[in-house]
Structure formats: C-alpha cells, structure tokens
Length: 265
Image 1 (cartoon, helix red, strand yellow):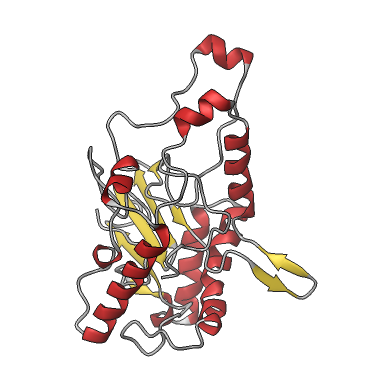
Image 2 (cartoon, rainbow, N blue to C red):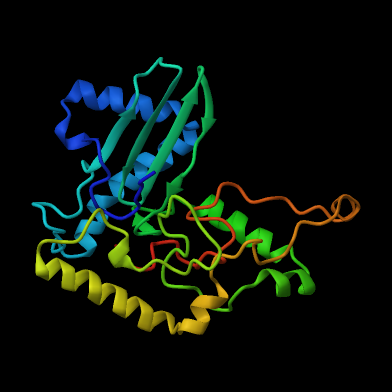
C-alpha cells in the first residue's frame, strides 16, 4: 500500500547493499516486468542520479553520505516467489515498479512510475531524453483534439507544481495536490533537511502561482473531469489513439515541456 517517487527509503534491500551476484539477480527480476525498451529506460533513470549529483554541485545529502546515489534503489519481495499470491516492488528516486502475481499470472503492474531528472542531458554529439517517446505521444494526443474537445479536456492553463494524486494508495473525491512534506517516509530528524523540504515546497508553489482556487480546479473528482471518450459511432468517424503509459499519472494535467520533475527532488 505504501509507495514513493521521492529519494526516500522505499523499503526492502538496496542495490548498494547487495553483492555483485545479488545485484545481477535483482536486475533480472526487474527485467521480467519490463519490455526491453522499458528496462533500458529504467536503468537509464537510475544512472541519471550521477548526472543530477553533478548538476546540484554534489551538495544535496538528504541525511545520508551520498544524496544522489544510483545504488539507492530498493527491491522488496512480498510472499515467496512461486506461492499462489506473491509480489515484488522495485523503487527509488523517480522509479516505482510494482508487480502482483496470482496463480502464476501477472495481474497488476500498478502503481507504475517512471520519471527522469534531468529530462534532457547533453551527450557527445547528441542529446539524451529517456522519456521523449511518451512525452511526444501525450503532445500528439492533445494536438489531436478539436477546439471543443480541448476546452473540455483542459483543467487549467498552467501546470501544478507537483503530482495531484501524489503517492496515495487510493484517491478520493476532492483530493488536492500533495505537498512535498507528505511524500517521504516519515519526517526528517534533521531540522536542516526539514527546512530544505519546506523551502523547496514554498518556492515551487510560488513558481506555479497557484491559489487555493487553482488547486480546487485540478483536484481529483469522481467522476473525473475532462473530455469523455466518444460514443462508438463517433470513435469510428474520428478515432483518437490513446497515449502510451503516462510518465507520472493519468488525467491530471498535460505534461510540462521538460519532464524533469518540477520540484527537482
């Protein structure tokens, strides 16, 4: 029931605490739940921690010896592999993969979260954008809407500063954006880190320009807000291809131009 996308303790055995053989086996488990492109994307996101560390001047520590650590991705097993019901989870900063197996059959892969920070990285002779495909698919979907459809689909002209549904195990009518202080496994014992999280949240809110009324406009609603799927006869006349798996969540807002997490956690 508990999952995270922040660089907090995700629970389980961290990659950095495994020996080389265990690391190989852990990554083999992860690969079973992903396509080849999906696995390449996930491992790239893990490696970006090294890039982010440099971009931040090697300063962020989050209460540990190394704040941005590609070894801080945790594997947790629920039950025993081969039991009638068992599951595994793999997660760390900007990753949360969850797979539930019942009677030898994969029945759930949610929540599934893949982000990238930085979203764009310059390479020798090129550019790395791990989530370019889903980002462009989302844009194509929005551009496929006519004026009336876009008017009903658009909840707000500017993006909220974080994920509205956050890491809630369940969402309910009226839920508004979760603030950063609630997206960690417990509160920080270090007052400096507590102030840091408060400051990042405050600056993000100021940057978004959102008021309480703005947050209410993009709150979770049941039934959902937005443009409803067309009736069968309308779909036959003007089909709209659905997007591939979303990067961060479904139906809350159009992704930003840069898919680096807006708060740069």
